[in-house]
Length: 339
Image 1 (cartoon, one colour):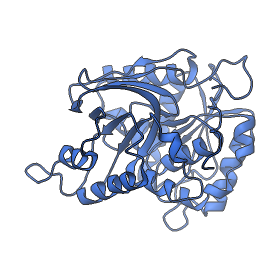
Image 2 (cartoon, helix red, strand yellow; image 1 turned 90 degrees about the horizontal axis):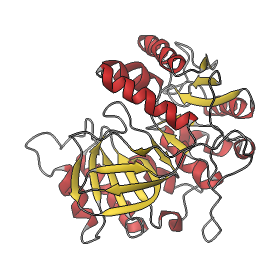
Image 3 (cartoon, one colour; image 1 turned 135 degrees about the horizontal axis):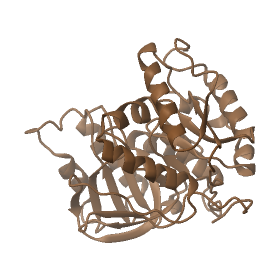
């Protein structure tokens, strides 16, 4: 794709009350202990006004190795959901280690014909990045069923849950820009400055893996982008290495700003350990004068603020603000891709 014109931004149609949302196993299996999380997710989505159904592969005890099923089976079920006009959004049940096995089996024609929100993070980052590269589809880097709606949402204070429900409902049904995302005192300015650009990102190891496939985003797609990333598990040195890969690839020379999610379970970032995540990031960035806003709530660390891939965002690191400058969905009456 290098050197070719980028696909026009492909926004899904806005959801309406009563629309069908399907929870699907797009990567890992469903252990019995997490069945209640699925049930709680159904309650959350129904409270937003949607009908909810479970896809057949989302069944306790079903698995193949570390996956819910063989990659071709998962792709087959996903393609069926993409082709079904009744299905208006797809929520991943969980992350895992499977999306790499079926990136080449996804029906991109069905996506172009009827784009739908796909919600998820972690391994689902691969779907967002690759489908954005191939079709321009807006990817909803947002909470999924087991670790998100069915778990960390439940542990959040009632006021935060209500705030998130309203935010997600607006994201999926509203055709006006969200504007400023709800900030919290945890947000940190690691390098001041302002930037506006398209959000591109996900879990950092999946960004690097996506760029190693034939479906990689051409480098020019990072021009002026706001790169967002987070990480869960592994070593602090791994994060440094992933950032170095992006430096060597030229990505860090092209972006306009960076948003770093709150880290989780990264060995070497314990209190008193050195270096800190801030030191790692600034070390790799060197003298690149771009704003960096950090410790933002998206990814594995807690209830997710949505980060729609491909949507223009505004970042003011010193003021600790992050805004979605355009809607992630298009009005019902409009047909075809919308830029």
